[in-house]
Length: 183
Image 1 (spheres, rainbow, N blue to C red):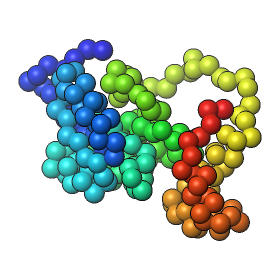
Image 2: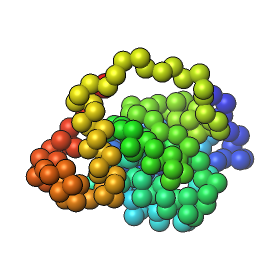
Image 3: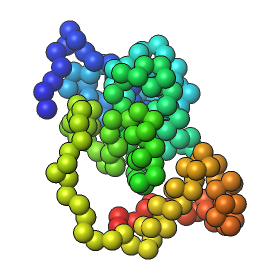
């Protein structure tokens, strides 16, 4: 991946509650010529964005108990030219669609390295050659996708989503805290 010259360092905002991941990623992105600011919560991320005016942003989907989707929306409202990549360890179709609708350029699952993130940030068009999976999703994965869809429909409100699913809130919380099955 080509580096950005020092005199034209691009500003990048990194927001993720995993401090170790942020430290490693910040170092890797700095080596590639970026001026990186890091936040570990949505409020600090927004405050930094207002001061720092980043051209690029890498935002985690789940930042503690907050949604990175909210931050994507706020960053785009500040500057709709900000190139945003959404990162997540809890990927779902519903959150990917919402991230893109809100203005993210790409959606990557963790662990993603600096080169993958840079490639996503610089990608301006879709890729029609992406292979289509011939295998249907497993029942467990379908359940995960459905839970995510209902949660999105209720603006991330777990209690409201649980009521809509006719499920106890704690049961839904436990299901959401589990990592999704691959397929």
